[in-house]
Image (cartoon, rainbow, N blue to C red; front, side, top):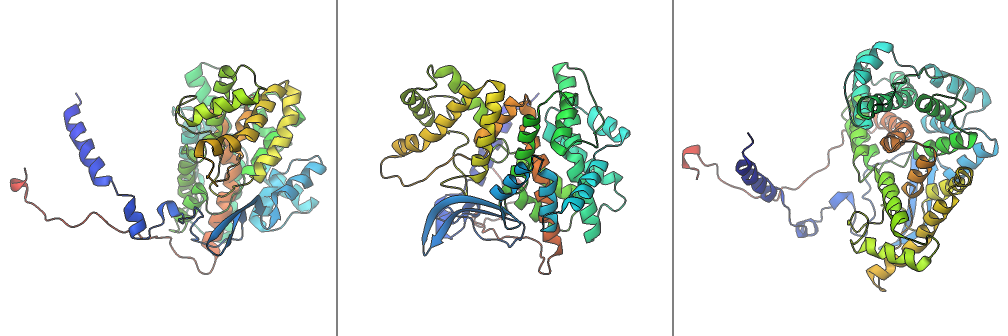
Length: 453
């Protein structure tokens, strides 16, 4: 039987020993959360993979600018416009660009897509033993253990030779959608009483189409627009600079020259945290609550009043947070959100959910003003929606379960993780990442056990 008094006393001791006065960070000029005092990120590395721009510095001032996202120097808007103009999917092209630094020609893209498709399938024994036989209530946890399991199938799992890292990366990028789809099927069978359906990946389908086929079971079970939206989300999630938490985690673990499977698993663990990868679920839940408690979705004053209630911890989950609003880098705008919003409207029309889309749009437009009122007229902080604001709504229109929202983020982001790992382990100035921490506990004497009270 658990001794509650023992754990209560232990909890108190642990709490006291782990508390650090926030003023000490300023006293010792420690960048808490690797953030400067002005909110900008501390520069800790160099990369050629991606760039996230939300502000510029002029002297000591941080000035907000419209958000920009670049993959290998190319604006995300231009990448998306390019493949959408051709009415084709862009995820494979994006993966190729991130890894190689240049866009593929038609022949290169065909060969690359065919190669990825050839790697999608999982060995039957692996699927049975690692995914179906072992219970799991969280798709990301099943994904993490499955990635570690792939180590055992690799003939050279620990090699960091460039050719081997490329092969490992392509294998993981190709297999992620299959692992996630099978993990979800296992979860819904074990805990929701649904039929277990394990389907073989289809080589003739794109990455987005194949994933929808694996979870829905019919190539006619989704529209072209639905597949287009999922492909777009994978592209928008593929990379976001080296400073986001999961990519930085990937680089930290990779810098020790550990195997790719351990490094990827550490990044998955980071992404699973609700402050990183889980915000779109919270947005969806917030909006579901709003749809119930706001009678007239078109009444700006009623919507404003509800948003103020949220900020005052009197509505939704009483956290005081309007989810999907604000970003560590973007201030005026998140380019991913603007791109996604345009296509989300088309899908809302196709699904007969335009009223909901317009409520989302109204919340987006009203929140900055409501936030200023809440903070006071002197507040100069600029806030904007981020990509999570619309992504959960899009997933719901695709009839994709909430259990898959963050795993889908991982399916896109693994391409960026792998590219950053390769960069971390190939540049000439590589060095294990080891930042410094200052100890502020103080010094105490060792007391023999007989003298302790």
